Amino acid sequence: RNTPSRTIWPLRTQTNLAMPRTSGANGALLLLATLFLLQAAVPAYGLVRNDGALPRVTLKNNKTPQTLSNLPALKQVVKEDGAVQRLKGGSFLSGLKDTLFPVDTWEMPKFFSMSFMMFMIIYIYTTVRDTKDTLVVSTCGAESITFLKVYGVLPAATMFMVYYSNISNFFSKKALFYVTAAPFIAFYILFAWVLYPNRGWLHPPMPKDLDERWQYPVSLLCNWSYSLFYVVSELWGSVGVSVLFWQLANDIIPVWQAKRFYPLFGQLANIAPICAGQTVAYFAHMSSEGDDSFGLALQYTTMLITAAGACLFGLFHYIQILDERDEKLGRKGDEAAKPKKKKPKMGLVESFKFLVQQKYLAYLCILVVSYGLSINLTEVIWKSMVKKAYTNKKDYQIFMGNYSSMVGAATFVIIFFGSNIVKHLGWTVGALTTPVLMGGLAAPFFAYVLFTDVSNNKKALMNAVWVGCAQNVLSKSIKYALFDPTKEMAYIPLDPESKVKGKAAIDVLAARIGKSGGALVQQAIVIVFGNIINGAGCVAAVFYVTMAGWIYSVFGLARMFEAKIAEGKKASDQEEKDASDRRKNK
Image (cartoon, rainbow, N blue to C red; front, side, top):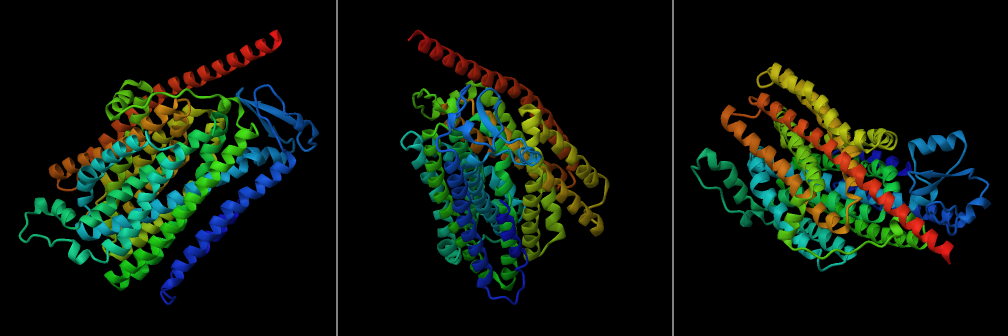
């Protein structure tokens, strides 16, 4: 389990400009190859070891597997949440392991495979996120991002929802994964080897004597391939993790496993920002030689993105094999064995009505919108100060690459605590932790911006940059450690139709509405106050109103979530009782 973290750190030291240009790409490719071997070797070891000891373990309610009595290493079978039985040892070290890493040996193949799958998705996202900011900010200006999020990303998210809703009616779940993910990887290859090298004649020249009010949107239109890269990368951030990964997790992992697995999934996966951040920082040093060097660095990073995409597809296929094996061996419990009723397919209009009419999904939508709005409000002020502090393109990209690495390292540590919060204190406390801590962490940052002269004092500016950096790092770490797992757990009690179409609408469209809403607020503040820093007081007010609505929605969703879990448990117990009565009558 510790091997991946040891393979990443040497990459951080590869910043010597005297090294050959290909050394960074080769080292990163070697890293991805090593991780790919690990994702096959580690789960395979656990699978062989488990199958040798427990050839046919049946995990069902109130039914102790016969093979367990022959295993001297296991002292007891413990019933958890009335849904399934887990195996526990009686030693102190076993208890410590169960507290820090509550995954049984037979569960490790699926757990590690899912973790490495999330690693690949986040690696791709972190790499393209830092690249898109460099392309757009350096060419069109930082202010153009607010226009691009509202008039580019939001319509694209809507169109993707239409596309995904339609193809989900025609493709199986397995095929749907490939059809959704493959176009993203293909676009990044097209951009690196076709669009960017030919940008000189693909991009029309900027009009002369243009009014300043129209400078940013016109610049985005003239540099349309950069804008398209930004939009596609933003969509991957929502589609990759929320739709591709979590939808698969919700389909193959029952609730009793999710309470232990979901907070830990990001533990190995969030090493990815560390790796990707240092990769971006290394290639930023290469780009200092000129624009053509940036194009070469872009092709190197795209090679890594393509390799990560290939690993992603291989992992998905491998996870399907593991899930089918668990089904045959009865390892998923009664909850997974029960056939689910198929609901009729709905069109786009019916999908919107279905989403609006369900209060449960409405609460989930508010949670996602609230996070997108709140993180966007604080992040834009901070990035505007980072741009003031690091005016050079190379320095800005290096700083953001190191920032991504800090987010990954902090998340790697905090996820251990998040796992125990959900496990011991329950879903409600875990869901409330994110808005409460985000609001608390933002207070010193807003106070520093409001009561110090960051516009004219260089020292005050740098202090504000690092205060904001700490706030953003910890806020995103808490989000990955607690918000994402608790949000995804809330989808599990829903029927398949709500999971597929409701989840696509909420995670893609609602996330974009949150960020685009934040961009609209910032546009209005800039018009009134001249710049976002002067309007920091208004930003703080909107931020804390959003926090209040977020907390209210968590309480409402918690009541409905617990009710659905109790209802499902009651139905399962009744079915088993009826089956027992029928056996007695026979």
